[in-house]
Structure formats: C-alpha cells, structure tokens
Image (cartoon, rainbow, N blue to C red; front, side):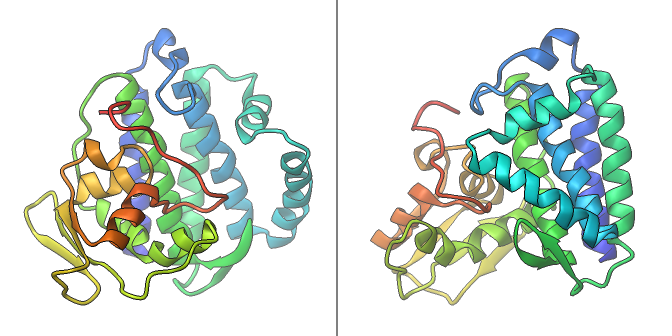
Length: 263
C-alpha cells in the first residue's frame, strides 16, 4: 500500500498546489465539466474523501451515512447539489484547507490497511488498493477540469499508470454497463509513458489494438476528451466502439464531450 498511498497523496497535493493559485473569480468560474466551478470540483472530491475516510476507519458509520445519501440520489437530487449544501459555509481557500486535512487523513488511514482488505463503498466492497486507485483517478479527472478551466497544461506523471490500468480493466464493464454484448477479444493496449517507457496490457494483437500516449488514453477513459481530440490510434471495430464510450469510473453509463468541445 505504501507505493499507491504515496502516489495518491502526490496527486492530491498536485491539485491542491494548483488551487492555491486560484483567485476568488477563478474559484467560481464554470469549467467544461457540466459548468461546475473549481469550488464544485473540490467540494465533490471533499465529499467522497470524507465518506472514504469513514469507510477506512468506521464501517458502521459509513453504512449508516450511505443509506440517506442513496435515498436523496434516488429522489432525484444531484450529488453536486448535495456537496454544495455540505460545504456552503466555506469559500475556496477554506474549502481547500478542509480538503487538505481530509485527504491527508484518508491516505494515513488507507496505509493502515493491507492492500487486499475490503472496504465498504457505494456498490460492492473494494480492496484498499483498488479504493486508493479509484480515488487517484477521480482526483486526476476532476483536477483536469480545473486545469482546463484556468487554461494551463498539467505536467504528466508516472501516476497515470494507475488510471490507465483502470481504463484497460474496465473494458468489459463498459459494455456490460450499457447492456451491450461484450467483445470476445480484449484489446492490446500499448501506451507511451511520460518518461518514454512503454506500458502494455493484454495479449499482443495486430487486429485489436490501441496505441498512443498514456495521457491521451487517461483523458479518454475518464471522459475528459473525445477520441478525435486525442492522438490515440486504434485497430478493430470493437476497439473503436469501446473508445467512443469508454468509462473507467463507476455509475450509470455516461457520455464524454463531443469532438472539438474539450481540446
């Protein structure tokens, strides 16, 4: 857990450092993600880091809080509105300070667990390692919205490998989640890491393959970019179908941006 825990903390800190530079106006400026502001993005992360801390330290407390949340969502409330309600008393810098305390506590709590320990979550329980990877992915994805909002290029890091792995391993789930037939052949995924190394998944194939930069792949599977707005190349009809609807995060089927909208 030490390695993934440090990577998760580093991802948190990288986004927090960006948020330290935001003006009051930048905190409230809408981003390309459903017009959420940077404040909304951090509030969303804050909410689930808070419940994540409950999951890692007090299973009973988490389960008790999960039921009323489920009822509110089932009744039609959106999670963004719930997060706004929870942290409405905090401005951007105060929210950031609260989030820092939470995510530091969460990483510390996760490091007390074995990687295979099962933690309760919304849906099936997750291993502590998978939980940390999912929090890293979500932090990176919502962080991308903030980086895009301030029109700055985010430096790519080796932490992308955790997100790329989630993207590859949710290949079948992407189809199941949309109640579509699952292709029989897994795609051979070949990605160029930020340091120039090559990351590969699944058996070698020339007829079912996707290759390109790890950053572009992560932007795609987190639905922050359309396939046409990346440098990814793919071979195979099933592979292209997957990349046009790839979704490495849990929840009902979601659609990413249209081509040309987020570039």
